[in-house]
Image (tube, rainbow, N blue to C red; front, side, top):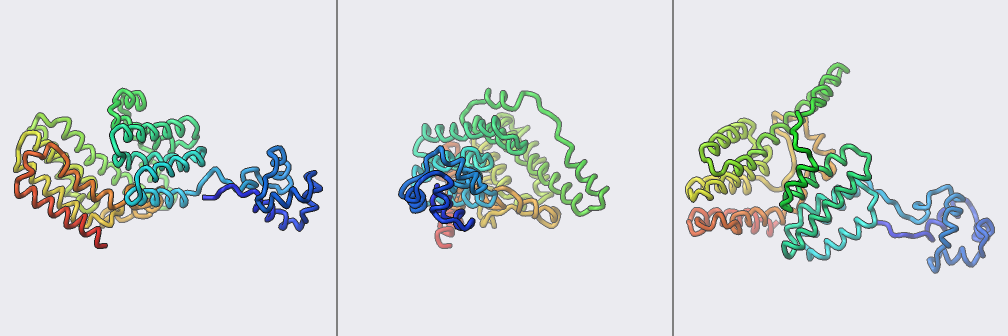
Length: 375
C-alpha cells in the first residue's frame, strides 16, 4: 500500500510539464528553496497550497499526495489472502493490529471494509480469550453498519447485512438479528429466472444455461446447508432427526455433494454426530463422525469452489468472486479446526476412549496435520 509521497508526485508532474523549480515556485508564490525541500522530502507544502498545486497539475489532492482511498478488487483479494495466511503463521495480535491500520487508512473503501469484516469473522476464534474474540466480532459489526449506512451499492449492503447477522448469532444476540432482518420470511426472488429468459430471448442460450445452473446450485446448497441448523433444532426428537437426515442425505447423494461441496457435507455430518452424541448413542454418533472424517481427508485440499459434470457452466461465476475460488481462511487454520472439532467438543467426551474415535483422530492427524506439514 502506498504511503503519502507529495514530493515524488510534484517532481514527476513538474517534469511532465517541462517546468523548472523556479517556474513552479513563481506560480505558487514560494521560494525555489521551498519547492526543492518539498521534492526531497525535507518539508511539505502548507495545507492551504494543496488545492492550488492540484489545480495546477490537473490532479486531485489525493493523487497529489500519492494516496488513493480505494483499492482495486484484485488488490483487496490479494490483501485478504495474505492476511489470512498471516493469521496462521504470525502472532495474532500483530496481524490484528495491521488489520486495524488498514481499516483506518481505507475507511471509505467499502468493498475492502466488507472483506475485512469477513476476515475478522473467520479468524476471531484465534483470539487469546472470549473477551477479545467478542471485541473482534463487535468490530466486524461496526464495519457492516458503516457499509449499510454509507454505501449506495446494493450488493455490498446485502452482503453486509448477512455478515452482521452472522456476528449477532455468534455474539448470542438473537434480538439484533430479528431487528436487522425483520421477522417475516420473504419469498425467494425470481430475478434469476427472468434473467435466464431474457438471455434466451436475446439469442444467448449458453448464458441462460449458466444463470439457471447458478440458481440451482445456490438453492441446492441452501437446502442442504440449512439441515445442520434444522437437526440441532429438532435434536430432542430423534424421529424428526431421522426424517431430516433421510431427505438431506438423499439429495446430497443424488448431487454427489461430498465431492461437489465437501465443506457443506462436513457440517451436516458433524451436526448429525452431535445430535446422536447428545442421546449417548455412541454407534450412530461415530458413524456420522466417520462420514465427517472421510469428507475431510478425501480430496478436500487444496480447497477450491468448483462445478462438476452436471454444474458444468458455473466455473466462470466462481472466478469472479471477490475472494476467488479459494477458502476464506488459510488451509492450516481450517485443518486445525477440523481436528479440534473432534478433540475439543465436550459432547464427544463419552466416546473419546473408544478405539473407533481414536482411529478417526489418527486419520485426521495423518491426512491434515502431518500431510500439511510435509507439503
